[in-house]
Image (cartoon, rainbow over all chains, first blue to last red; front, top):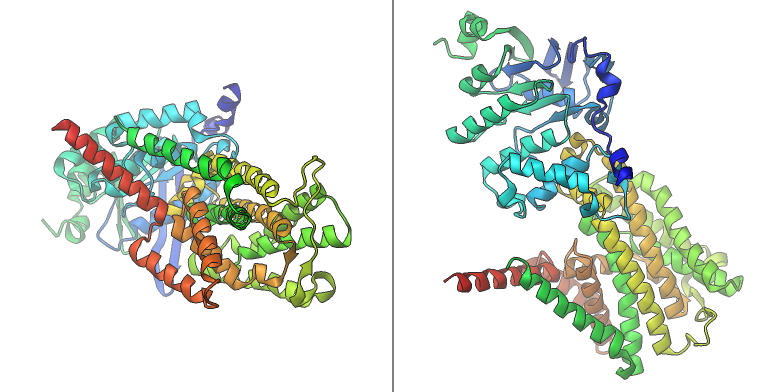
Length: 267
Length: 325
């Protein structure tokens, strides 16, 4: 089993620790064009390690596009992205995941015809070298299996582990989204409206779970639900039409007249 | 209680397979022995495509090319250069694997219809090569006179029954290898690529590499089947690797149930049987293939094996329900 221990290379914390003093994520004049449309327009953003930041803004503000830029789904047209001091602007998606960036999707994106356990397992083995092993059964990897089972229990999915994901409720699927992102022990967690479509009870338990997360994980959260956003965040960034509108503490955002006008409808 | 039905039916299936494949063949007529031998070879071929089609979710329209390439390697080496079994066997698989490592660079970027079209085009280039490179391949006439291999045992493989058991061993070896492959972490990652490639990338998988390796594995096992086919048939021709051949393999996989390995093997047996049975009555074999294809898509889109699995699951639920009441 010693070989297995060695084969599991978790997020490369040691390599990066020396840079921990600096910010976790820096967006420097970041822009992307889709044809004539500039969906994200010159956004500057600095997030320090361990911060809980909420990204707000009306529909079409460019929040999800910003996530796609940071996670590498889209390539930036202009500007830079620095993660723990390293320029990742040109890196492919999988390399960013290896560095410790995990994300969830606003529109659930799982492996529908696999079981819950198989879904979580996919995330558990994603950053290990064992994902290329062809001669040994997956079930024989004890550490991976244990980690997977821990996550299943933590997210109350243990009873449902053998069910196909497509047969689960929307709420359970949202849970799996978060569980898969956490399975990778990320340094930066991008949560794209994790509470979308959840009942208020489900939302509450999700908020609780997010609050309990390891404080060293930096979290960037897109959220429409004010209660979740204000309860969870230390600082809030507001995007509007692809541009950064304002940034500040809860009170500052609540009392900002422009934000009230465009986002809260001038209440 | 859970899984008892499944394990019972699995044991039943194993006993049935053991009976038909290992115990009963000495009692078959020589026609049947030859037919079952052919079924096993195509079962390997169908399973090899299942790695790509069923597990990775990439439908290749050029899989027969690897089957044919390996068969040609055996044909040329054994007739022209009088090479022994081991050299032919290794060269055949190496040729298929080698071609796929080159083709892989062209196909692994694509998905869906684009993958299908590129593999079709590449498969046809190999077919064209077999058809037009007359000095090497014999062109339309193919290469005949491939003798059954001499494996250094006192048994002669010219005897259909001995040859059958020889093929059975290779079938079992390839089955075990492929089962190990799909149950490994790598095999697991292929299912992820099938289900959601975008999610896989975000999780940290270099999906291109997984698709590439899957393509090479699939082609290598296809070559494995091709080697055996050359020895079985004693003859290779461009028709072993034309579009019709590729479509037949896809049909075997879809009919049997993609992503199950055993399903495509079952599908291969059915198609080989029907092909031999029906061609005794009519020349219009392709018409029948088309009909089976349409019927499968309409009534069993998940394939026979998944149909059986669903049936067993329902049976188990019923059993559990009656026990609970």
